[in-house]
Length: 307
Image 1: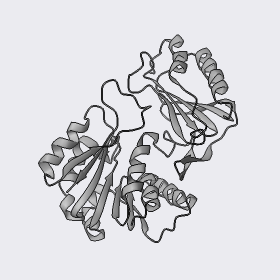
Image 2: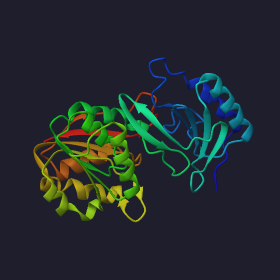
Image 3: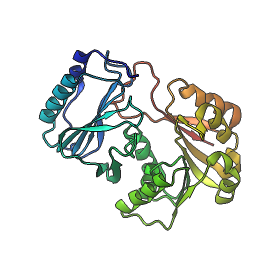
C-alpha cells in the first residue's frame, strides 16, 4: 500500500525549479530531484523535462488537487510543453496518467550533441537515465581509440557516447534483447555505423569465458541494476566481476564503475577494488548533474579507476 504524503507539500517543489536557459531548453534534463532527501517532505517527487514532455514521477501517493495545481504551474513555467504526464512509481507497473496535452508515448530527446529514444508508459524506466549524463560525457571525451566493454548496457547510451568519441570498438552486453534493440536504434538515430559495435544478450555472470575470448578491452563500463529479480544482486555479484578483471581487461586498462545503491555507497566499490583488483587506482569521482542534490551522500556513484 502506498504511503500518503502531506498534500500541501507538493507545491513546494516550485520553489526549487528554475526554467531552463535558452541554451538548455532543448536538452533532456531533470528539473527537480527530491529522492536525495535534500528537500523536506519532497523525497517522493522527481520532475523531468523530456522536450516536449514534462514527466512528474511520484514514489508515494498525492492528492489529485495538489497534482493538478502543480501541473498548472509547470505549464506556466514551460509553455513549450505539449504534454504533462504523471507516473505512479509506487504502483507495481508504474502507470502513467496524462495531465495535460498530448498522450505522447515515444519521442527522441537531445543530450549534448547526442540523441536518444524515450518510451513513456511501456516500462517503469524511460530508456535513458538522466543522472548518468556526466558519465556519458566523460566516455565521449575519453573513448578515442579504445576497445570498450559495456556491461549491463541497457539501451546503450554509453556505447553511443563512445562511438561519438571515436572508440575503436564497443561490445554491449545485457540480458534484455528489447533493451539492446533500442540500443541499436539509438546508434542509428545518431547516424553511427555499427561495423565496430556488437550487441550480445548474455548473463554476464555466466559469460566470463566469452568475455575473455572477445577481449582484451581497454575500458570497462559497468553500470548494473541494484537488484534484478532472478539475475542480479549487486552486493553479491559486483565482486564476482571485479575479481576476474584480469581475464578480459588489457594491461593499463581503465574502468568506469557505477553504483546506484544508497545502502552500499562508494566505499563498497573502493573496498572490493582494494581487495580484488589492487592494481587499479581510483583516479576520479564523476558527479551527476548538480540538480541531483543528496542530503546524505547516498546517490549515484561513478568512479574512474586506472591500472
